[in-house]
Length: 143
Length: 143
Length: 143
Image 1 (spheres, helix red, strand yellow):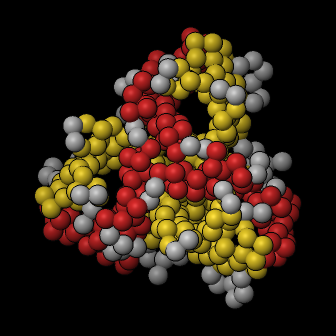
Image 2: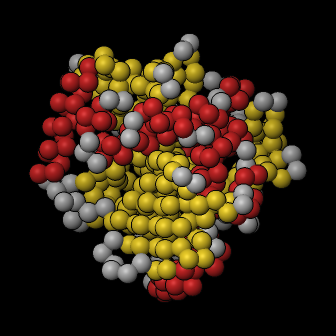
Image 3: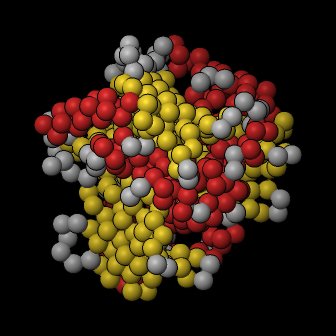
């Protein structure tokens, strides 16, 4: 990666990617899982490092996220997913985005950072919109 | 909300909204309350859920924020307001923005997340600039 | 600073500055210090308030950052630098950017906010890219 590639990122591309993530994460945190999952391609994958097989397709992705949402609700936990520092790299019709993702957790005791991860997405265009073809979330863990 | 609406957000609109918030929040955290309040329309409202009547007009907004600034100074507390994940929706001459807002609090003991909220603004154009017509801040509290 | 200046910030300028910081901070947190330092001009300065003499030139900047990276690795600490709320002000061929910077620290015990700072940069154009001519990092400390 060189600094020369900076201007290759068009302002409209960055704006559309940032708006995509803003809506996507707000849907997740609002528990609107079906709508959140509609931001993946029908055969999209969601991998988490340490888990051997990624979720594949919206149905599996919805199932996994719904379980988490139900568990958190039971435990009286609300979460806010902040995605930021997104490095955007167009590549042959798709777009690679490597971001930091910070999970803020709110309980009756207050708000605190719950975890820090990186999120590596491959986005593909679907008409005027973006869809996630592949997502890989890596937990930040010291060596 | 559908993903098709993504490209409706013009890059210049997003840039101007983000710059608006960057300046607005830095003024607040620098204690420059009059300048911060000038980002509201003269009859703008600032509502916080749980408080029955919103502050209306710059004078009331300044009064409320000044009290908070004075209290924090007395207690040796500094704050940084991070606004992010802003979903921007143009609507009939105004712009609706729903953001996450994270309050980082710094005391002699160090820095920590103080609270997590959502911030829903209605922005209106004032010549080349934005002004806040309505703000509603909701504290994130688990159900 | 007036709200009228908002539209002076071109969307392409903001996008390029945000992409610059995303890449710059990811390089730092990945321990790729030489590449991170290449985002400074050859004679760029990195000042931290409270430290009498700033690091000057890439060699000194690399030396300082490498020491920190080695110490953190020894202590089993990973860091994520979030730069945000960047207020961008073009000025005579250079660009001034005042941002908040939040350091998230990850240890075996988990993730937490480590410190909150402001970061004031002077960026200069280098062909199609940005380079940092001057950086001043101020620790947020209550009065």
